[in-house]
Length: 141
Image 1: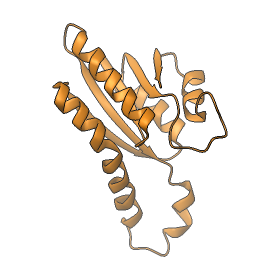
Image 2: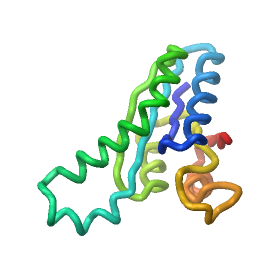
Image 3: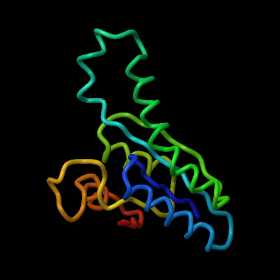
């Protein structure tokens, strides 16, 4: 089974990774997890003219690697095969594109990310992904 886990450095995302690790370990057959980190770069576009070429991309990659590190440790400890994907842009749109590109069987998301408290029950990214994909999606608290 191919699982896609979107991580953003939040506790909820780490819980989603832990759940995916348990699920992958419990299932028979070849299971693989792709960890996805997405950072919205729309607010940084006007800075591109003031910084060296590639500096923003490097900065976003560093943020993603920092967000991915705890989830990688969880999967390494559970001995679950995994890889990583890093994307930039609208978070929900990029998750949906990765879902299509990866051909995953299950998407695992934290129910609330690092975003603001504008959505009390389920985060806005999770809502957009749930509404737009036909791939089974599991929300983890």
